[in-house]
Length: 302
Image (cartoon, rainbow, N blue to C red; front, side):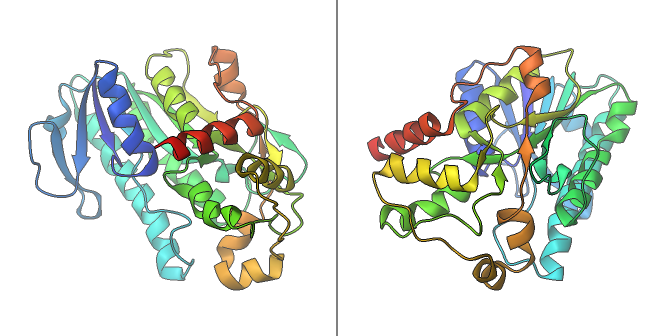
């Protein structure tokens, strides 16, 4: 396939591109700088710049671009950046695809389990209604931004990813230094549920959805076995062979992280990947202990 990908320098995109190319696909990256070769397409979501004709030979689009949710403290300005980077880019891309005479077969557009808000102890799947809070509002607007492409007949999947586990970046990579020093521990009460997925399974699920023609709409990219933060903490300590007994009080997290503490760290999200499972996708690492052990072993061997 000829596949266009946005967000190619992020954690997921930087792993997805070589995986696709290794599978024999041609990948064209959408970039915000002058293209270096014919495999790059210039776009500027902030300025509304994207030439639809650059996508005329594309069979599929994987849209991953967006400002990092946990990369900065949530000031009002940064919250606007989080929202606008998702809505503007998705709206521009969807409109460009709709303008084509021959449209791609599928648009896989990034989203997040933030859609569900705080679910507490309640298990949810793709049929659940949106929750409340800033991230729920962002993901609702984000997913709605693909509407013009859907109305034009493009199969659209919203990739509602959980916490992607990788030693290369994201939440796990930020935790590792403290846990290696035996300074890790549960966050807040530790009772909040964490919906997670390994980077390898995230990439495999995206590749699976490229040709899963019957699947459309929201798709949870999460392990079928969510865990509490306390269970995750124990598993990470065991994988590193370090004690993990230094809890971080909720009040300290709120002081350090602001609003992100409640929506990104202390939030409880117990999400199941019903659509992926029913479509026949098989997870390589469904259980947290084996997943973390594999990630740590792989990183230590690099």
